[in-house]
Image (cartoon, rainbow, N blue to C red; front, side, top):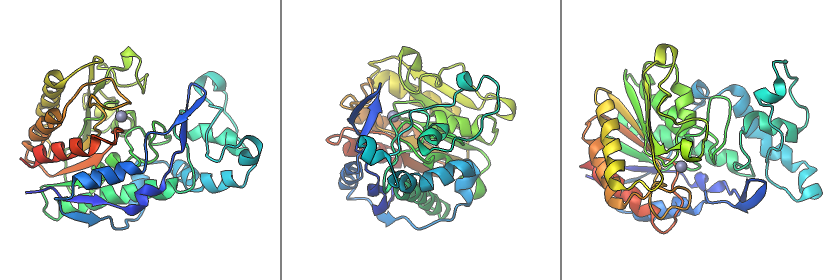
Length: 348
Ligand SMILES: [Zn+2]
């Protein structure tokens, strides 16, 4: 049995051109070609094009103001003067109204677009250009179409989402992510009648956005293994083992930070811990980043294709309806094979 694959050609329309890291433009790594190398590796799987879905579940996860900003920012930016003044044709913030600036005072919303971008975007690596909104919105349709397949009886479905989403909070975007595909998928599984949904995040980085969405929720739990933010890694301020949820969601968040250089043995062991933790869920979302691989330029973890296959076996063995949502993974040579290995393992 091969897990069905959902994709959309519109997800190629986001072209980051570059990121800005510590003030310096560097080449983007979240490239449209990621879609093609994954599709090529999954040729033997049944392929479905995403179908359009309305905004109901999108707005259940994200603030209207964030959605409005993302949908209009590229066109507003193109009206200038940024490209002619400084040669910047992508929306990139330079000003961040953090708690340190606000000092407890109520701010007035900034008039200038270059002042407004930092209200929503919390880093300088996540640029918005022509096609970004269309691609991000298409990725949500990909996730929701995968949920439809599972609701119709498939045991699992893979959503080839791009750009990725797990760093998106209800009010903000960053980490090369614009809309939280996995969180929308989890909401869709709840809306379909599943009462205990677990999100297991295998991406090399902590999914601070998904954690934020479900932080106070008892019905959707969030568990992640990732490179330890205490060792200096993004998203820096979240992903520590002490973060376990709050309010009605107290105890429903689980974080397993891992040291740099972690390989298959410990990584797969941690996936097993999260599988045990999720064992009484009635539906599963896997945030399937493959950037924990040894060849990946974005993380210091050393997981192999065998590790991803073993992770798939452990989570597939839960035997619950599963939506597998693509997150990170940036080595174009190897990432398709890593996704295929996970899917093979999950199918059992
Ligand atoms: Zn990542």
